[in-house]
Length: 432
Ligand code: DAH
Image (cartoon, rainbow, N blue to C red; front, top):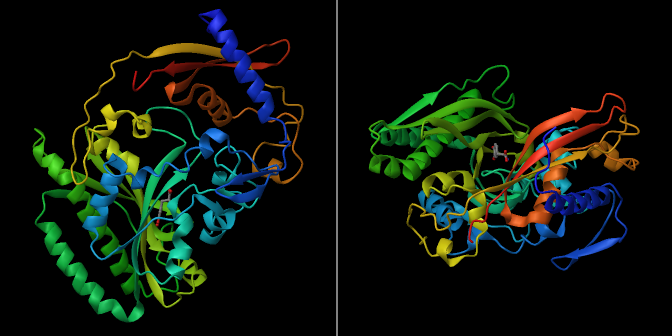
């Protein structure tokens, strides 16, 4: 077991962590909470801390001269004639976030350890796809929707419980096949003239099929249009930067087969950057059920969802995702609408780590597992340990000073059978 270093400091932190840990295991006592002027009844699902709710009004994707907003604008300008949308609230029903999109009842994303719930029926959206059905229902055929999304996760330089996504979609009616073919021919020609290497190892196979109700010829053209549209967007975003770099290689993009409950065939797209493949988006041919649900059974098309931070970190060379939340002018004044500047670090503060070890709560009845099932039915008084719960507490105590949380050791007392874990908590201020 790794030894705790500065005992007095760490005891304080340990005390804080353990008192919050026991709070996490209690069912909440106050019955309701008011958020954005709406009252939500609390229940066994309520798990969103005030520190997360405090992020709702920030709307970085709409803050002028902020890198997230600059990137949103660049993409919106690329997709001419697509309607730009930004929903007013991050609170959605679980029906919109999961059910309507065909997520199975036991999907891990639904669990309390992965998502933020206000109660059993309302949550903070975990992805912009939560708005697909309503956006199609409103009659939009070509649209881009940007928003903040929320997920409980680990802590490191690229994970933050709030981040931003952009969803894009385009649909046609069945009689537009020829129009689509002509468009694809034109786009293929334009792309052929770009220094871009496209590796397409995706396939339409039994595990990634076209939909039975679609004419395979039309579905193929839609998938092709999706690929052309995204390849050209990626070239627009990364190509210029690549041309400026000393590296002589052309930009490389890779298409991989994927699975999402709301698309088939489905793909993931990766960009080769600084020697590694980086996944930047998921996409596919929209499941017909989604369009049927939206009252548009005569339409078919594609959709994608991309992570704005992921791309912005590369384009602006921003090394830590926490920086996007900085209100320090030394960060904010570096960026300007329409421009991709390279971020210049202004804090050279060293990291400072503390190792924290603790016994895990004893699981009296491990069968009544943590997560959706336990929340829906009776809660056990002590939940099994989940790393995301621990990270939540650390964020709550340390705020944005925490840079990473890494498990470094674990231990089981052979006599008592109790388990303990040790984490390295790495602190570093971005600003001071
Ligand atoms: N919502 C997915 C996610 O957050 C990304 C995604 C995949 C969006 C496929 C789409 C899509 O629109 O068609 O991981």
